[in-house]
Image 1: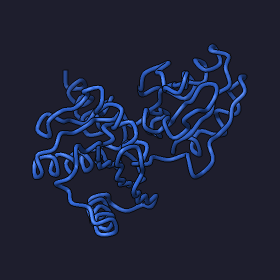
Image 2 (image 1 turned 30 degrees about the vertical axis):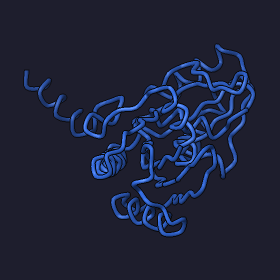
Image 3 (image 1 turned 180 degrees about the vertical axis):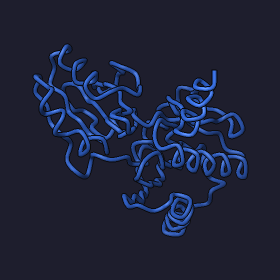
Length: 236
């Protein structure tokens, strides 16, 4: 079983190759460059390093959202293009679930946070039970104050990770009454390795789709779409 994994849902660009539960290669960069400039060159570098024949892939796993609208479109287009070119199925992995999977085996609640601007985060709440990740609260776009209130009501220790942490760390510290921690740097951002590991599980469960039918999951309207809706509402 061989899966190529892509994640360009946020500032991080990441490409990985997994085979039979082994992470053969992973290339991750957290730097302000356009993913359209980096994703395919990163894949090419990995392919050369491990002598990868893309025809040998069983599937392509991609972080399917939520996240940056531009980043998701680039990741989706790259995955769809590869899927169509090599006739491979796609596995759409929810971005926030893949982030949570970085903390495999962590006790208590896991709360990934991606900065969604406008005082909101893309988030979800997860836990690990008997070696499996379970969804406590599915991924959503929510205000930070509402998220903190929800976590306080649950009354459990929580570990945060994601690019929303440095943005809202101080606010969370003010609002939370439950015990909490923040993930260390090497586990706190998107990794294609986690997308691929979950992709393997989902593939085995039959959660695959054709390249043609794949679409990112944005969770909310883009800024341009919101502004257009506001203008139409104002004209009425």
